[in-house]
Length: 514
Image 1 (cartoon, helix red, strand yellow):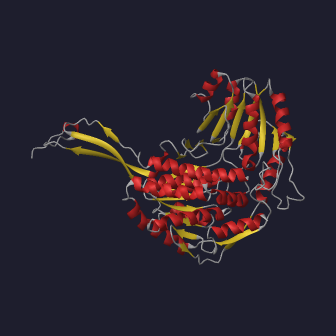
Image 2 (cartoon, rainbow, N blue to C red):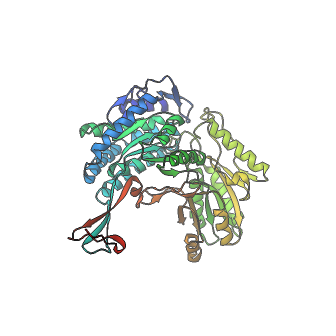
């Protein structure tokens, strides 16, 4: 039944021939390649559709159209560009229910999270509309008489966006909507695991571009695997690559783009910790731990991987945590009674089992979970029990990121010890502490506190708002997307000096007799 409903939704959005897996804004192109991938839902294992991977021919067409469209788009006034983004946001509002269901069924996240992902797209559109009137430069005092200096920002060019399966559409929008109001054009390569959500979004964008009689190529979509991503990374015509995925993937992208002195925004792995102090509101900390560890079945870059608990409350808190885990409902994410859906595929299940085995081999102790579910409703083989493991921070598997609902439980006595554990991993995305002790809260946020790009007090590690810059440090990549002044990454800075006097003073007081 779920598959039939999704097929009906795809048809309603006008998605028919999925060999047309390349879109240059308002025109779909039929891919001539012979490589076809069947997309199966992790919810029930049923095939949804087959897509044809793009070839070099389609790729070149997309890049050339994008180049041509940039010549037009960069000269459109920024508030006018914002108006197009506003209309896209309204179209997304109108299709929020349909798009949320497609995301949920294709990726496996709960329906509430699917709707939430579309809401993030709507929110970033609203943010970008306001930003289109606030692309501010600076006025700078000149040391030379009758001179003025200013700093202004210009559109950068083509932005390549490589997105991951866990947020098949939202993270793209964080980049694309900001880039659009900045005057850039975009080429989007979504994850080959979740291309249908991207196709559905582009079908909606197409209608806005057609209604406004805009040229093709402002927003572009190309379906393919890592080979298309590699071409984008190597392509000097693409000024900025924004890539979301594993640290291994990000290192490769950074190496290739860096070799041509291109720009990167890298949003990579997270090994996020939440510290629970004896001075915390334990009920609130409990809610944050559960949502952070099992939301999206642990497949968020901001998912909680480590829970660091003060020794005086350790046993009490663990007991509460296990009790809540036993009450979690696992099943079809389109059923709103369920809390947790499936992992993305059977390979993710193997990674889950291997991580648990590695942890036990290092001396860790499983307190709950460690089981693949089977039987009625679990035929796809992608449903697992969320797992709690008592471990040590230095264990090799604890130092790694496993994209699964596994949380490692660690014990500390002093705050300095907890912060040291929190920071003692290669990743640096998100972090949190639960405490009502003002001293502890401020230490955590100080220069000697969390070394992550995101540090929260009395709120979990996931659920970032679009108004703040999103990103991390160390092997998380160092990039920033979405809010604050992240827009500057999508533009080029230019310093201007104007001599409005009658003389020509030279730097350092140098003079020529002319």
